[in-house]
Length: 114
Length: 114
Image (tube, rainbow over all chains, first blue to last red):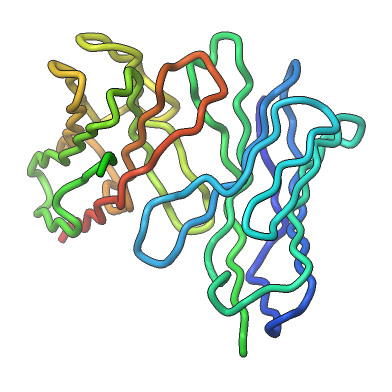
């Protein structure tokens, strides 16, 4: 069935380090892919998205490229900040009869130390 | 400012009691969703509604009920039949279902059964 597998956390980095959070998906067809971020005690916010193969989503220094051949959508940032500490969720929308339903990964906790 | 509000932020319930979580949006969105978040499991869809007076079960609807009498409102009732209701509940909305639109999330309600 449809699923998302994310890199297990928690991930702990020093400020200005390079970040990669791996995400792979299993879905039929050509899903749209999303990264959401959740700050402590809050709801989710859309970080970036890509709707077709080879698209690159980017926002606030974060990037992810839709790789259809490897069914992946890895999140990267060149230099993380303390304020990036949050939980990151990879998700996809499969289309068709999904009626807007998003399928989420389990989330990856990121902690950035000064 | 447009957005989604959920109330209350924290809710405590005794076993055997029904409880209703509020979700209101002023984004003029047609589609609304309820998700449940448990540690390490990501988000799972409980119910969704594509339009007023219509709603469908998601992946984990047992023990929950909803109504959609107004476009702005999508309350979730956690009934006594829900065997493990302690969780973080997130409401979301999007312009329409059946599209890869961004879902906007509320701040969530943390329900604890005593």
